[in-house]
Image (tube, rainbow over the protein chains, first blue to last red):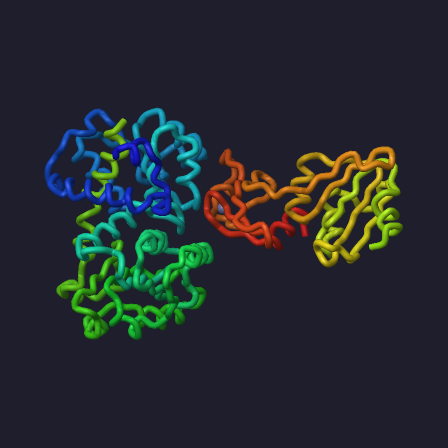
Amino acid sequence: MKEMFAGRDVIRILDFDREELEELFNETDEMLRYKKGKIDILKGKVMALAFFEPSTRTRLSFQTAMLRLGGSVIGFSEVRTTSIAKGETLADTIRMLDSYSDVIVIRHSVEGAARFAAEIAEVPVINAGDGTRHHPTQAMIDLYTIRRNFESIDGLTVGVLGDLKYGRAATSFIYGVSKYRLKKLFLISPPLLKARREVIERLKAQGVNYEETEDLEGIISELDVLYVTRIQKERFPDPTEYEKVKGSYRITASLLKDAKKELIILHPLPRVDEIANEVDRTRHAKYFEQASYGVPLRMALLKLILAGE
Amino acid sequence: MSKSERELIVRKIENGTVIDHIPAGYALHVLKILGISGKEGMRIAIVMNVESKKLGKKDIVKVENIELSEETVNRIALIAPTATINIIRNYKVVMKRKVRIPEVIEGLITCINPRCITNQPREPVTPRFRVISKNPLKIVCEYCETIMEHSEIIRQLIGE
Ligand SMILES: [Zn+2]
């Protein structure tokens, strides 16, 4: 079974099928036992973090995962202090890390950077976010959280809310959840931030029952899962337009009064004010639980990629 | 088209290339790909909007004393996917081939997404696209997954 992951690049959630995800999730169940402990299965292995774009959560989560597996971590978390600031190409930086490490985790603002890095590096490359495109490990965590809360992802009605155009977490989540036979997928966003064409074309090709809407309130009662992402002010040419939109996509206790009892709310975090604090105390709030799976899932992934070698 | 008409258009060339079955209206684009303005001096015949069994209407371009490189043929395929290339030597068609749209297009086109890795200066990366539809031609960037239409491909190839 291990061959499915051993030595493999993780560039897009699209590249993994349900059987592979199931293997990963089963391994994650195992890793939950070591959430606060240590298991020395990657002793002597080195993970290189190449964070060309700042990140706290994702970077620390990868780092913690590797340390708990007994491996070590090198790398950088901003480019200002590195040779890249002196004009080194991404290609040369990756070649260097490739010679030092057993796996490279890359985050970059340029789209397709992770795929390019994977073409250059001999060691496996994990995409921790490339521009507005992909964030596969986040999608794996999201799917795992749903799986922990429902018997099956098949048959659920799922809503994805926020910036579906530029949001890589939202995009990856849409790709991930579309692998399952959903009852319905709602794509909820202001018109300016609707899902990109390639995403919609893929949903159509897969025969996913989806609907694009601006109206969260109108469909909230149908949802089993609501995936919330942030809408950034910078995306709007007109700031007053942003102010208008912001309010209608804010999750509050009163919005949730029509929701199903079983509804779970997910968020890739960090949040700003798109989910009111009062929601944290409701049974729907699962975003902290979701965040807690970040380390064990990445432990499972690193183990499957590296331990088989 | 009558037989004598076809002879006029296709056969009466001593040496050169006849590009047939060009979608109607695209002959001038094909000439542009060939880098021909008309001032070069060779004899050229351009036939536009004539009847075609296969296409309804089609264009034909006939140029004396040239044979096309593989790269030029590949470019013509992206402009005129239905085209056939006839090489004429001594009044005879010595080779006839259909242009072929490849599954993967490397290097001929650049990605329209400025934030794509293939548009970063100095990175050693060649733009690469997968063909997702041949009719109408539609391609997707293998790096950033941006979809590009035939009109954009034509715009890039003929520089308009
Ligand atoms: Zn691209």
